[in-house]
Length: 214
Image (cartoon, rainbow, N blue to C red):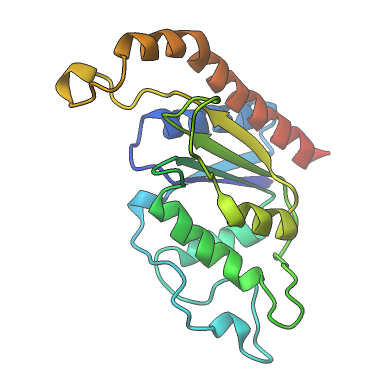
């Protein structure tokens, strides 16, 4: 059995990011019964970012998996043994969510060697980075996964990237102070693009599963 771990860094259980990740999972699972897809919602876990305990750097006991124990520990252990990894986050203020950022600190810092500055994960695997954002492809301030994307590429392999632009922020714009946005324009864009975005996520799931099974 091969396992893909999907990390949902968004706060809402059924909105844009969650929908994209669900479609990915459906696509991956459709390839073979030999593919297990497990989704972890970071907002459902009680954890912190890197505690600077340096336990992963102790001489003779160095580890490329975080040694700090909390609710994130079993997730990091599973990722270390997984065959594929998917990270999904909405973009807030041009960046991934705080929960995703703190997760990435815990994931990536143990990979870093302060002896030679190499990045070494327990194993290489295909990675997909998903972003959902209010900005358009022509006008956005997203830094996405930022410097962490370099860490992922160096340790796990060059990631694939999938972005859903100009997503709905809420279901009913009349309820909120959002006059700076045209709900009609948002709806028109969504009608033209959202199903295609979901299909791309589904196809990405099938592609990763097929690559893993080769």
